[in-house]
Length: 289
Image (cartoon, rainbow, N blue to C red):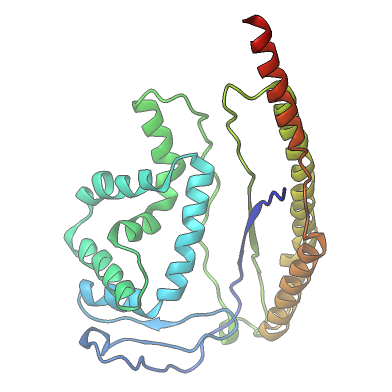
């Protein structure tokens, strides 16, 4: 039996400036005042112009791949950290947040959803609201919700977050990086089994043994990632944008190679233990009759 665990690795690095622009080839009139530069060295530059609805549409349309990818990351983080399903947060977006959002921002949010739809991305306005409010939804809202509804749950501390301003290229004294910041977030998802009451202690013990082996393997993944990225921010300082981008990409490649070297991995579970234990239970039942 093979048990796998999933990792979410978020890497963010602000380094360089944007190249010349190119306009989208689509003919939707809402896009006529907008454009997106070709991506270069980690930067994405878009120009949005018009009414709130038009700006939203341009945002959703021109950045659809990035929004779709980010939404997957946010969903995984929200559900993992809060132990609540994603429907909980969609409901909060519609019932709690939406009534308090001013009309111009509603129009922009709806525009983003329409732009995503035009690009074939299956996200609606409630998904977009969750994306814009995920920092407020957990743990601020989830802690409040659990208290109000008398739900017994661990109160999560409010993590440190910050806003940042990046000066790059000709805006720095010598064009080199002054203060690089690399953020790595690792989320581990382990298999969960809620055994029925008919399962005996030997079977449960075998499951726990297998999970211990799997956890040790996944911990090795975590330690490998941490070791690879430790100190990278300091190494990037003083580098030119091109050299920093090369070093960053080398680290990504090396990190992936480290993970590939640890897999594939198989945890063997002795299923005969459950069969034998069930047979013993049945024999005991017969003996009591």
